[in-house]
Length: 327
Image (cartoon, rainbow, N blue to C red; front, side):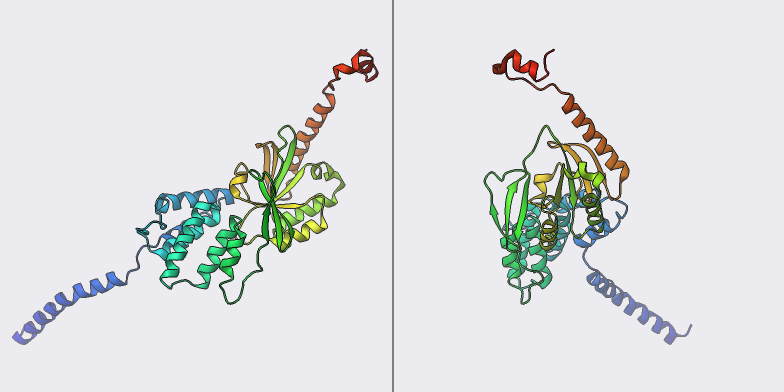
């Protein structure tokens, strides 16, 4: 090899030795930081065969394991990027419907607002989180900050006395609704159905239940519940209730009030005694599930008819004999 060629090789190697670390550093700077939201979204997408309840439990558990202890409401803020944590918490809250997660979203929203980084998506996401836990007034105020509203204002809520458990929202009109408690009949069987006015399977199932004379047994014990969510179907509930005033839909006030209902997939039917689930089935049509519940209710009614009726002591033996309780 000639001296000049050898010199060129040495110079080229020296230049490469100096440039290579700079190229590596540039690549390192360009590599995106690990995103909590992306990891959680990928995990969510990896669960296509899970039921809604299973997916919700898995996604929320993964979020809590990674970010549950982070409190963005404190002075120290959060060790995770504010926007990344906001997006991940919005995703988790969509499954949990948990006021604790909504609180974190609110704190992150205010931090991003102070940084001038709020977008229309952030506004809508925070408002939907508030709506999912029935804080309608606050959701309306947040949405009012947008130049154009994406949805109509949610109804104003008033509270009935003793609305403390099994709370539901009974929608009177597009602008007003009442929060009250559904009475619990501990000794009587009832069928609670989680439905949605925009769910094809729910609507088809309810249409059959209303129209079929053989389903009268079900209509007599049926309670319709609509799960809480980011966009409460106010118009759909009102339309159904106008058409079926004896079988109204009730919007759940908080998911925690109805946590004994393990799944809010629609439609899901629960045969209940008090807070105890005796049987359940999901989806429509489901003739086997209906047959089981019908048999249980028929057995219950037969037992009630066979049970001796207590005769008041004050009426004495003559009244008892006339009533057929004595030979």
